[in-house]
Image (cartoon, rainbow, N blue to C red; front, side, top):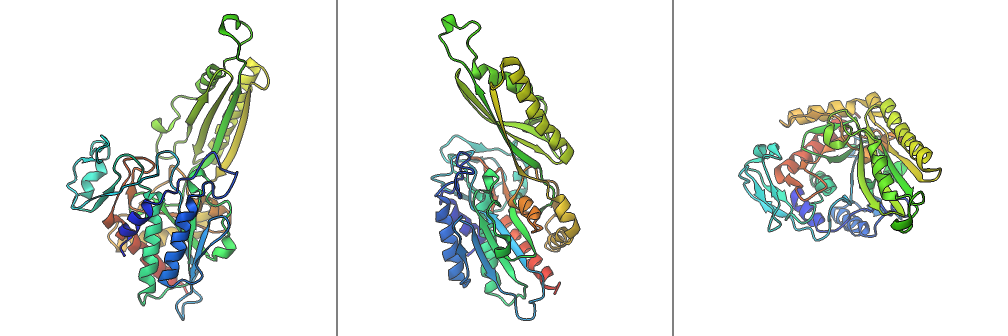
Length: 409
């Protein structure tokens, strides 16, 4: 089966994770079990008897080394099963555009259009088999494309005589809410090195990511009749707006790129009595990241000094750190991936991730784990798209990387 065919099968299984249930239970949504069980059954059918899902919804499988290659490094490939909670992930209806023209694509009857003016890379996809949504949901290629590519790699490996060292396969829940590595069992996984397959265009090779934190401000107000509110009412919603105004307006995702960090207001809701503002903080530089965290504490202190102690409560939770310091001592992971891409005629794209992956956390848990692209674009929304040919190239990269590590016996 081709990788894109697997993606079509996985995409229709709803697996969104939930910010509200983060830290309450693992996985954060029961829906993720459905895909986990499908994957275990599929791996069993391919001949991996040890494939299993644990009590936290992590899928593990191991392929023993080819005879004579037992001393090669054990190599892992990892992808996540959940999809973003930022946009509808139920009722996904993938659409296939064969021999894509390179022009704008209308997404069903939704009224949404993937425009070349918004996504200039579309011109480079002309002639490929394009896979899109119908405009009402996300596609889920982040990261079901990574899963499909890894499973296809497994199938092709088992059906061939390609020599390889021990291969370790892992699929995680809750990556989209920053908790994908929380209960990952590195010892059970059994790899010396690994790659997450969880990025954008084919050829992406990433070993630098944001330092990240999640922040929630809870503003407590006092609600009385507006006719007699003078010197009594504290409007939590207005104070929330005031709080946002204390943050730099030019340091948001819409105004930054490359290595530049940001404060991102992801959600605001409330009324006079109570208002909550949720943020994510991101920065590649550790010192700048700490300064951003300090800024949030400073804002909370300023609001409480003005409106009274206890007006605002701050909850700041570190999510992951920049993996670069863990990867650089194992830079062969990057060199080998670059060499394989070049051998296959794929342009290697080595650039920082303006986000994070399970690999960032895993690298600090003793498993050096850079990230590879999946061939997808415009994740987390209705304009998400990917090509069958791009997915095939990623599968070829996995074979090439496994072959290189087999020769390190």
